[in-house]
Length: 117
Image 1: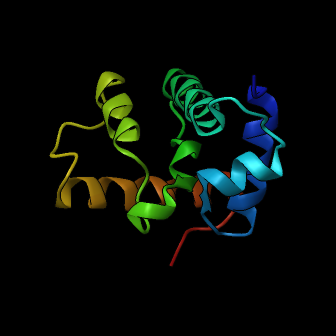
Image 2 (image 1 turned 90 degrees about the horizontal axis):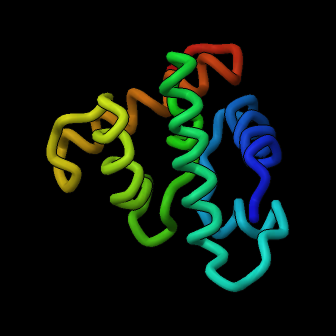
């Protein structure tokens, strides 16, 4: 199972570089082994979201996106955001894009040290 501290450290480095990463790239870089490689990553991301919600921080998990959805994370990101009381919009529409962009910018600012332009 993917260690949360390792996942957070990887995403913090991405924030410092002001870049997003795919789930697959994250799994590869962190040497997540089968079975269910991407599922292991998404479970870790949701646990990071829970930690961030409790600590009133931006969701660092917003920096992880799906290669097949372009620049957005999978539906689970929005479902988890809803469960944690941060997202109440349409997970398949503009509400999702707006919310995700806000979280990415906030993550860059919080962990990367500069406001996104």
